[in-house]
Image (cartoon, rainbow, N blue to C red; front, side, top):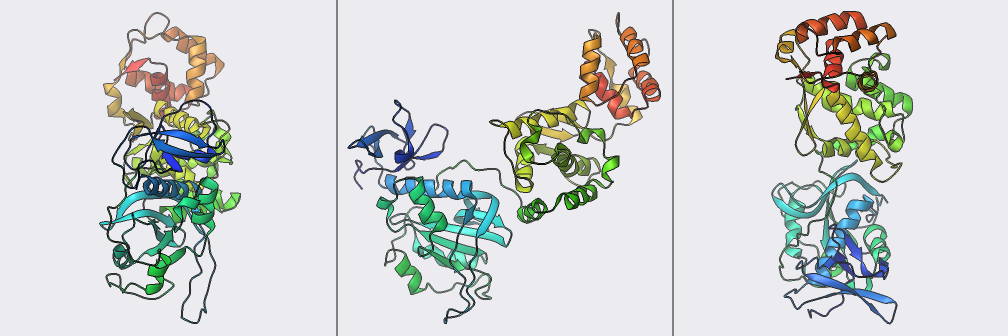
Length: 442
């Protein structure tokens, strides 16, 4: 294909696929070809039709098709649904059922049981593979391999790429179109053996441009999508998402192992952007605590996790409407930092967190007073609010006097035991207060 061919899609500096016709003419912006990675420029023809063109000569045989392929995968990942053709159980057309396949998160250009696939999602009905068929890129001989995986597999062909000029056109073809789609395999169609190699159906070949293309290089274009989740997790998350409020509370109580009136104070933390999850903040905070903190403390799951993993979990289970840009990320980050201050977590590099075990008396021996620590009225108020510890007025002055000219003359463990009795608070909260005020080290 000539290098001067007009490309409808390209990658911006953020790694997102954009359409030339959807971009305003507001000065120079850097774009890259989804095929070769070379720089492309935004051009306009007759003041209306826009397209991308390589800035410098480059060897890019299928740049137009690769850009369209990347845009299709990006659209599927962002839209999280597709309208597939009806399932037909027999040749007479009986048993047809219209449906919408929906998913929360997906993996793009990945492998399933060692077989490369374009798109893999976990839907309520089970795993779903989607293959994108674009002339000169698609290897039709891989259909039998895809069928043999035993998962529902949908093929979406784009027979006229030159007519797809924007995201709107692409949405109609990929998401809503029916005549350009075919089920390569579906559990409802028949009970085929997982490792059988079904013969290629002539109807499928006719659908894909009327001929079988020669094998071509498999396309693999990185597209920004949300982190991958374990198979089956989406189904449970989607089911929870549809529950009424009372049922959500019961589910969270079961997850935490205690009724809501006995949930720890760490489940009601005031953070910025807390309303972005369209539920009372105690719901999503209880969800995080029950999923990632409490099971790990009790040894039921891994004790390390990332902030992105938490966001992915919440994205499956709640409708997220950010109060401002990235509000949901800020809310989760502040909540995890609050759990760190309260002694439930320790922060690791790259927004990773590790669950700390329940504190034991012998572990207090590792704590030492910070010789440079100072405590003020304002500082004590802020720190006590962060760890959600109510300090009676008659104890505030006592604490300030302890750190007026240094630190208490007793060991940290002794001081903690004394405060536990005076403030009627658990050891974890007292230690969290001392850490938050930077009064102890170790």
